Image (tube, rainbow, N blue to C red):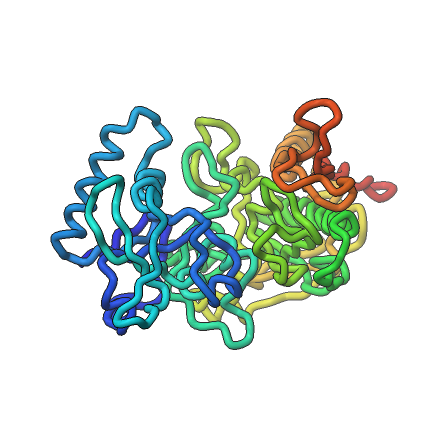
Length: 437
């Protein structure tokens, strides 16, 4: 019996006992879906979504092998490049609608009878529960596994993902780091010297966005938070470069989801009850590859082009951070408008501390005394902190545009459409240096 998984699917628990339980023991094949509505899926499997072949269980039986051969041949002989493993699986299993499975008159939950293709193998298909087999939206955006009474996740798959680099899946790795699921960083990653912002000033004051919030209001505060965040990070990058320290990124709050389609109440369909704000993945709000040196197609892994490494916001919660590092914290306040030399002088008394935590860091760093170094810093950080991404597409203000209308502009003159708000803006200029500095 085989669990066939994409390389970006992570197991948190052993799934084999589940497949021995009564309902699932009857399944020949089991598969996850791309749905994101956990409450609805908990009542009945959502069959309108694509099955996702990033996580599929194949029980060793003749009809399963027959299906696998048909599946393989469908991909190999496809005339369209888009007919890869997932598209082929969905084509074969949905030519005829799957039929809910009943045994002796009793419905077997989450199991279906399937005939593959027009006259292929018959088999029993289990649709894995979305509450336990989570995807990139339900786990990293909805944080559904943290809700009261939520079951322990069995696995998570890195779907609904952004910020892939030319040379590496930076966004996926960063999500795993943020949730303690990336286990292969070397010890050196956890044994450096760091600078970070105080939690009190890392974000704007938190505002709860209820289920009926107008998307336009939520986006407005989301972008205010984004501007504050870029100012915090730019100051930390300057201080980190001046001191030769790595930067622990500030907490990142999102007041609106990030999706390529229309939203109402800043939530995409299927996630109407998700909590706003939420701790957002780095790829939702920052040009993630640029923080790891991937500026162009020849980008290389490692530090940023600034020579400053970054760590995830909850880095210090990672159990691999030695106690000697975690407990060596110096808290400092800086004046406004200081250059690199003045920053170094002001923080020199804390040189031995593993972590320097700056209170109210915005506006403290004004640049480098050396003109060439300052121009390079300004250029590089502007590139890192400018995020050209899909605009916020919202149903509010659309004059009741029907579903599947186009975002941002009409398909043809006279059509209704969903209006958009574009973001994010370029970062603010560096603050002016204080007089005489």
